[in-house]
Image 1: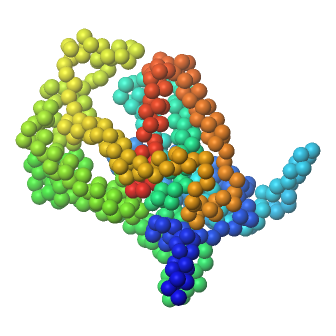
Image 2: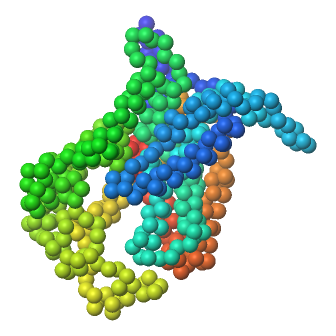
Image 3: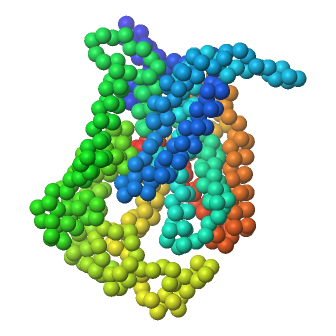
Length: 471
């Protein structure tokens, strides 16, 4: 009997993911017969991608960026998809001479169509929501350096940087997608929502998934009117500043906007999740790690740097600012030290004076380089063996978990597709550095070096993100 129970346990474990959270949320069933690339997918997917890109770029200029993730498209696509399924004609259309036939309405709107539409929508935004990363570079070029970047050049910058990532992602599938340990925590929220929207729950003793989702959607939408419009002070409740409103040190310590936020707290979910994403889909150990690092950096290192040691003559400048300053505490005018070609004019710099950063800005830049080194070290120590093993067995079929085995029922995307995306985007990048070199201000060798460095850190950063939900 013990042997039978042991065999049953082994079979059960093989049919479930090794990650508990994945086993609880992601089903282990599949229906390969469902239609996928339908007319509904292409229309709703493309429209949602464009709209999400526009909305996120528009709201990225707020002090607290309002990020719109693919979940919004995920929610809106369901009623629209069902409406299209009930109204579009079901008659099959034939393509002369080729024998192809297709229908704009192949049947009921299904979960796989819904998933693909959401993937389309997510392809237009950065991870977790927000505008494309390269938009920030264009903003800096236009706003801070007053460069005249043409629409074509800006468009190529955005498109190539986005497509470049897809090329790398496809080539790294064996390391970042197929292993069961790479579970991407933020995706579980969307999987749970898909099941809530499509699976029927017949239990009458508790709320169904759909009822639970509806109740909390209405409640959260209603509640947001308080911090968003009626009582904006709820976004950051800085009681220290209320007690001592005219004390500079108290405001530097307690302000949630321009200080260290000591004792400040927020009742606005947009403020809580603005920079690190939703804490509800981040593993506890990762949240604790970020919290400890935050306390050490903000509440120990920063006060010592600013008040005790006065690094970079810190007391002349605001404690929390990303601006550049002169020795007298005035904002630094970078246009006075640049040539018309946007190179550094050394003589003008010597005449104008040294450039100063606030300690928090300088330390954040420096810690960024430290984090890259720490990422390599962490991945090498904790995941190096698995990466090496996968590299050796890349051409052999290794043991797959239940979800990877289910995906074997479908023909995989050929690697040469991703190579075309990668090589094509690199070619356009090089074209950019030659044709629009006066606008982008980067030589071809600098572009190649930047791509090489990015390629080098994609795998370790991907491993961290896939296991902790942190970038």
